[in-house]
Length: 290
Image (cartoon, rainbow, N blue to C red):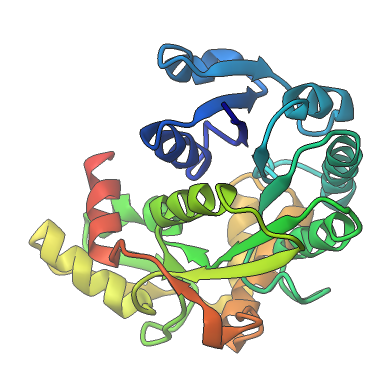
């Protein structure tokens, strides 16, 4: 039976990919930096391999003899410096490992806006990854979801007190998607057999913004929630105040500016795939975890 490799299983999307593949009767192996955090998969018959995504050796061992793989750049710890260099080390390891095995297909978690070489904050790292992975003969599907609905999670404790903190205008709307839809879409794509590289862009059922989030939270919390719009130019300052390195904080400043200006956009808006999970469903699940 064909076997599938999944990275990022302790994050928002990788666990859903594994769950979806197992649910369809597929054989799965997972790659985790800390195998103890993937213990629940071992109990379900999944092979758990210890590995570092910046190690070509670890990736080679994980990919050898498998049908397809779900790979990503994991989020960096807030205090990280030399971000682009650390990302490049992981990208180079992926290129070396994929090229050194007979894996038939890779689904790589990229992002909306990855077609741009600059001006998108941390999404630039995914642009770099796409450029390098395109040099491979192995077909790579670049899955480009938009803004994750789960990004609202840090604002929820204050929302319970009536205020939704945001750096973007209350009436501004932009594409948002639930992590669960990203994971299920990635799993479906893994089972396909493309002959060449391709881009699949993904959004939720409808665009939304701070006013919409506040309205949904007011309903779910049964209390009035109002958007509190902070000045956009204070993003970097706010992030450094939360312990982010100046380098990463500046990247998030650029990301929010790109959302506000529309620079963070889909390359092929006419063919965007729409997920099923609504903003209300995603927020309800996040509130249940508080």
